[in-house]
Length: 250
Image 1 (cartoon, helix red, strand yellow):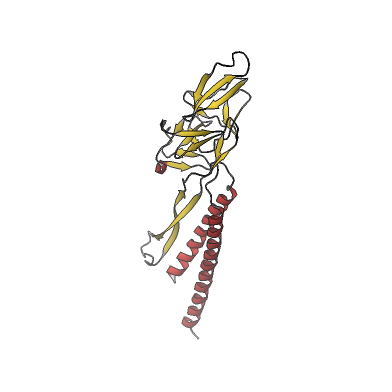
Image 2: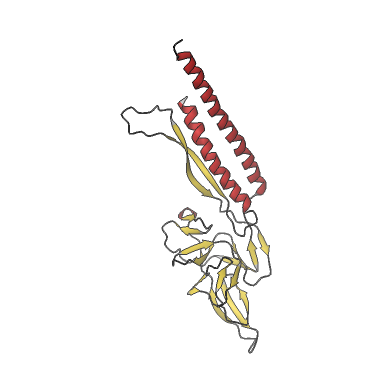
């Protein structure tokens, strides 16, 4: 009875959390550079400080970890000069308002009124010397190593100048955690070192790595699992009432 109640009760709760993760994945099927997430569940025996310990059959199903699928998404050519996509592993560094760094695979950038390269949500993109400032009236080109060059559209049009270079990093995947804003950070909050081996594709973006068909199948499976767990709770309640009637004095 204990095994049935505890396992079904906590299992149903964790199934709802996994359904929320799948829903979030489906909502980001078309989000640039999005990485799918999955909640992993494990069984943990109930610990009690009471003199009378609980039965060994009492176990909780708990959320063990949130796994991120780091498989690269498909490349899409856009033709925009400020769109970049990373080939293989790697991340683009961003400068957060508190001075820390965050990392993204979403290379869809724009210029603010001061000519600073930023994300669509207004977060400055980090270069080799801080924020990247683009001079006015300049035609941009981005090299495979993330170097940004500018060609003036007036004056000496044959003079190409290097403006800066995107800070590209590739820390171990186990050292990265996803924040509530969808950006990744180092687990110890320290800046990741630059990786010179990372290459980018200019005028392209990386799509989401979410497989919608797979996520829909997972959602249906979780719904059936939740129904089964709730039925188990109903069965446990019915068995408890039947047992109470048998043991009650006539």
